[in-house]
Length: 511
Image 1 (spheres, rainbow, N blue to C red):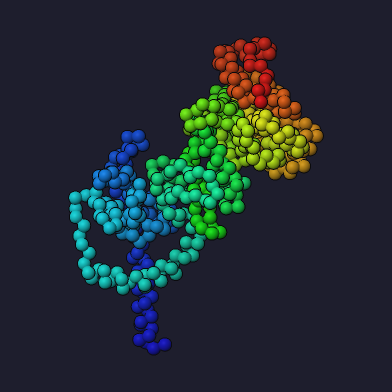
Image 2 (image 1 turned 180 degrees about the vertical axis):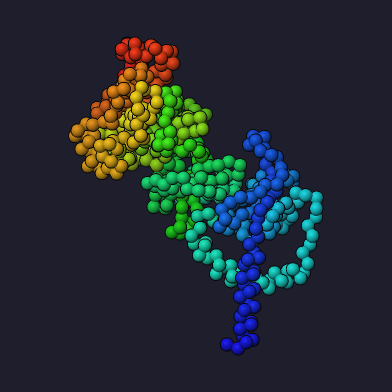
């Protein structure tokens, strides 16, 4: 290779590498603005320093609305690593008339001015300086070189980070054969932040939707039936309730074999009851609050309620009640989630696929393990109540109210069958030996826990018809909390001997 050839090749490499390096601006600060500053308790405007992982790029963003020609800023600030913002030194919205305008860029304070192509919208009074022709000439000349360099340097990175490279807006779509469209999310920027959980049907991400955090449950296309069923259950009349996870929307993302199905719901930082009990013990009042709000949500699901504003709420059987599917709000109020296996019962209509042996083995009722279900509405509600008894046992096992040691957190039957039981293991323990998780003797010395133990036993009764209804469980918990709050510590031993004479709600099942 001649010296001239070597020189030309070196110049080419330097051009490529320098172009790629120069294209990546280091964003350290962005213009900050929050139209909801009073509600979010933040500053209204200012400068936001951008923080993030060293190997991630940082950007600035702006969102705004155009109301009859009047520009209304919504939010500005720092934006996490997003391929849609790469190498953009100006904040430009290119979509045609979105409901909420969104743009992102790289470089310090690059969101000080916002643009809507072909029209330019300024948030400051400084006019945009026209670009000289020389700049355009250099830009078009270097595009091929920089394009090649970008492909070589970032293709491998893109392959491993494609999860964070979704477009930053939600575009409502419908799958052929789906019933109604999802609630309109209105072109709002949605960004996945981190995986919080993985389950049988997919994974759950913490995400950011404008000013709030949301949860995004992502199903692969092969689990479309579970996604569609859960979406339909959340969309039923009357399913907005304090103790049922708040549903925001449903989406289909990607094309061909890469299609993913998304459910967007409220996000709760404390996570599931399982996660909370692993890391925390609970006081008596905390146990009562969690148990009561869980039972209230279950009772509401099991109820047929006509005449609501949005229609007739049918009876819903969950079929996968477990502590992992109960989420806790910041004040420890419980809300029920994960309706992928749920059934609705409407007068004169089929309940759909009522295949009996579904759910989580550890929480399966004896009749489910035996495959001996009576496929009637009440039978499915009683299956939920058996699992509810196991959830109440988990709460009791981590309660500090009794005068005795608090057990380390364990799943129901973990002592008998370990962490990964087979169907045969559960049949042997639950059906043939008729075993249940251990109720500690010293729990009986606390008036409230003694009543809770009685309630638990009536929930997981081997005979399905003998189990309590969710409404009865809620009433029992309210009554036992009221009674124990009236008892002084010195009186507890006396009251325990009289507990059977208290006027608790009768053992009944309206199922």
